[in-house]
Image 1 (cartoon, helix red, strand yellow):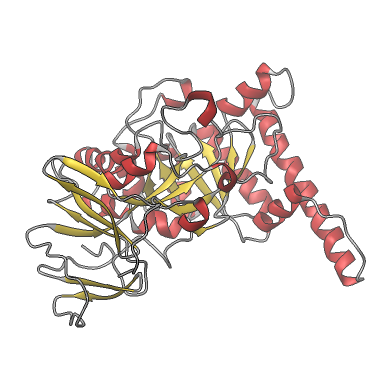
Image 2 (image 1 turned 180 degrees about the vertical axis):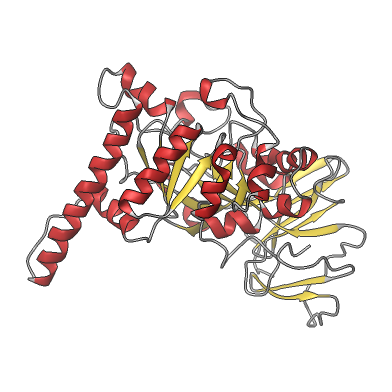
Length: 393
């Protein structure tokens, strides 16, 4: 199942030097290449989680493993999720068991501007070895979370208008900073750099998309308004009420990373949460990805969210795209992951059957051609990333 092409019955995926070099029915396998017999199974690309907190919100670690939000500054654009990821987080092993091989890890939603996101593979000794791309985007939040965090501190922003004002002020300062920086460069004069404003200038210049945490339709409208004012590339994250503005989102080519979908309606913003909503967005022409928002929903349930969205009306092919090619394209990773296509990384998962069947399992998982996970006789085994064979195959 290449995902971005037709299924191939009896096909072969050839991986050499970590990259896919051929996909098809009659692929010549060079002598000396190890052959994995997947007869009777389904072979797919590794899934891509577009919005998670693996390694920054560690499981079973409590306070010691909680590095999701730096809730001391409403503008954390200079912060990097990269600097807080612990590859030993149990979630990375869980991800492999669910066929997830890549994840975009983001700061949390406690700040109006939370920081820079990073894309990593779900296996490795250090985040530097796991790295796909950094930064990928900048995380921002509207709605209840930032107004609650700073409202409790009795400081700006404690309302929705305050949250929007913080974001506007930040971009206005970034515009002024860019003009002064460029003028200094033109005159060959020294200039004091500002890490926060440098990042926001990259957003204004279109280098980095703006990942906007937002649930309610009115907050989504504010996100669209702000993006219109400053001209940056907007990606709606969560989008619980996105179906209410589906036509507008489609017209403006704004993608939606929807989810998590396996949660209760724990706050006002989630009153419209429904497994029907992905299908509504897809049918309206919105580019769609599905997220677990791990650890809100465990990372290995990513595919199950897609399955139940199919049950509630999402097209099955669209469901597979929502956890493979779509998140890869939305987050600018489609030159590396998201499909079985020559030139992409050799991230391949062998499933016991259709992954949209909840009884199917990921049997073997390969990242860049290396087997990193297997399920045999009821036992899940994750390869030890600290162990290196004397020769790589």
